[in-house]
Every structure is written in structure tokens, then in C-alpha cells.
Amino acid sequence: MSEGLNFAAGMVVRLKSGGPAMVVETELAPGVVTCVWFQDGRKFNTFFRTETLMAVNETSGEKQRVQ
Image (cartoon, rainbow, N blue to C red):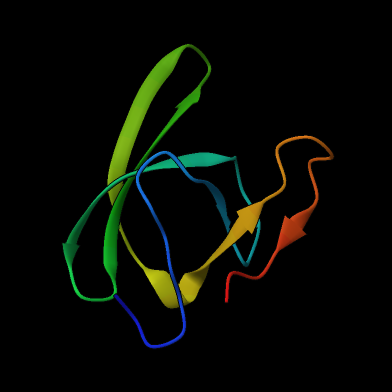
């Protein structure tokens, strides 16, 4: 994974620029993970560079940077 970042399968994340909460599915390559999310009853998934993601605190909904 990217230096200093640790995104594990099942972790709830969001793009740093905003958007829906997503769940990390798997690591495709160092620094690249696949995420899944639901919107308007439809399932979406794609890959993201880990530098573009931040963790979401599930209990409070707050965004947190992962270290």
C-alpha cells in the first residue's frame, strides 16, 4: 500500500473531495484499492488511489486521515 497509509478490507472510506461512504473491498496493487458503495438502490464499484481516500469514523460519521 502507499507509504504511511493502511486501508484494510471492510474499512469505511470517503474521497477526500467528498462523496458517498464506501467500503474497501481489496488491494489491487500497492496504493490502489477497490471500493464498493450503494446509491439510489444501485451498487457501484471501482478502484481508487489510496492517496485520494480518508477513513470515515462509523460511529460519528466524521472523516479521519488514516496513518
